[in-house]
Image (tube, rainbow, N blue to C red; front, top):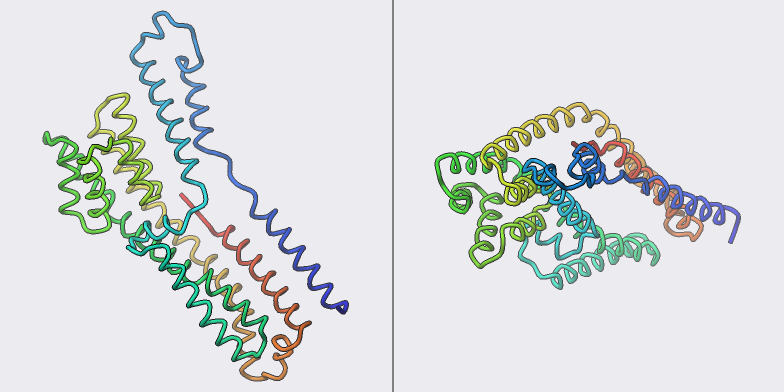
Amino acid sequence: MDTTTIAVIGLGALALVAGGFALAGGGGDSASKRIAAATARSPALKGRGGGASAADPADRRRKQVAETLKELERKAAQQKARLTVKQMIEQAGLSMPVSRFWIISALVGALFAFFAYVKTGSPLIGAGAGFAAAFGLPRWVVLFLRGRRQKFFLVEFANAIDIIVRGIKSGLPLNDCLRVIGQESPDPVGSEFRLLLENLRVGITLEDGLKRFYDRMPVAEVNFFQIVLAIQQKAGGNLSEALGNLSGVLRDRKRLQGKIKALSSEAKSSAAIIGSLPVVMLGLVYSTSPDYIMPLFTERSGNMILFGCVGWMGLGVLVMKKMIAFKV
């Protein structure tokens, strides 16, 4: 093994370590901070002695709200666990068994490995292409469908909440409002509310039904909806007013997301151009001077250099993605 190969391996290892440190940083638990701040502001939650203040209805309500937020925070932390293939398929709205997904992944990987080996003559390149295609392409397709379904859901979700508000103000029970949404709203909003209503019909509590709702559609807006209904169920209050405020917040949030998307479009375009430029240049050089670029695919030292470059490029793409991931 020559000096160049050793240097490439060392740089690749350094890139992986640096990437781990760059991506390991994570924001603290903002929900915990909000609950702690709310608890600090509420005298009833500091453990202030009983007596008249313990019997104060406002203090009891604040305590119930804090306990509800803590319970929802615990469930949200469990939701942050690693997403399984079955959950991805369900959230994408696909009726596909997990076994079929893995069969499709294996077929895609074998196809890409065969064509890469025939094109380059390198078993290492063929194996790498097959591995990347098998574990990358089908998963990317499912995640793309999942994201598109969530976008379609968010377009109509605020309107669905408005239907609940108008129904409650006119005297309809909550279940009848959910039934109207399931019948009148387009999918995926209508289908999700129909599933929620079916769960309630078979005896599942509203809290568990909303949890399943959030498992199928893990977006912040559904979590807000779950929090409002859970707090109203345990602490009481005007549900139509609370949901009306939530609808306004969701619409303001959507407008703010549009502004952020417009302001960050230039940065995202620049990141896409920078990330794709090495691949485009590699293709241009290969099309004009194949003999010049072929040692990267046919020789062992060239393979190591190529894999090192891929590692560096992957690190750069991940860092840029983290830098331009603007969230509301």
